[in-house]
Length: 268
Image 1 (tube, rainbow, N blue to C red):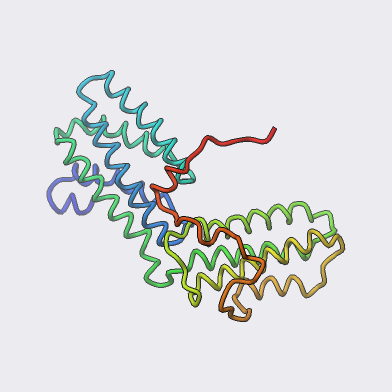
Image 2 (image 1 turned 180 degrees about the vertical axis):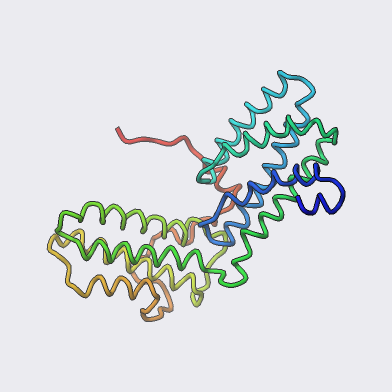
């Protein structure tokens, strides 16, 4: 908006600010994955607003465009596992495109303005990569370690069930961050490789405590926290139990996620 005001067109700045919704996505994802996701969101938002502007010439066409964007956005957000606010933002952006038709700008110009706002949001969300590129992965492993340590400390107590659920959820999230959301291969000497080894060690601690039945030793919780801080020996290769795990699966990308999208199945 400040750029639009300084250029003498506050309206253009307001239209471009619609692209700022891009910053609402990908906040907890690894930076490489986040950059791809945010670029996809920014382009999709620009297309939705441009479509809304183009469809404003007829009332029924505007309604049809917003409905079409709603269906496409729900499918795309489910395929990319986009969290809240999800498809709602794209529907709002398309509806706003119908409203900004009063600016009497061509749809391609509207789309470029929104895309420029999305580019600013992309830079803001990716700025942290300059300081620590693997910060999201470290945070996920640290959170998983703390959750596992919390479970080990209250095992065989009334608080066990809640702590077990919290630990399982944190381990699942750390697995997604370290494996599912990695578009690039990891070198054996990389920080990502060490974080994957730490995540595996946390899984072993957790499953061992579950299967043992007895209360774990007092040192186990401290061991989990040490693992989360990467205070474990370096390994040249993953531990033996990891053989067969999908570390070499196709790397994440929007196209791969969309092609792999399936209708959800629910247990009866």
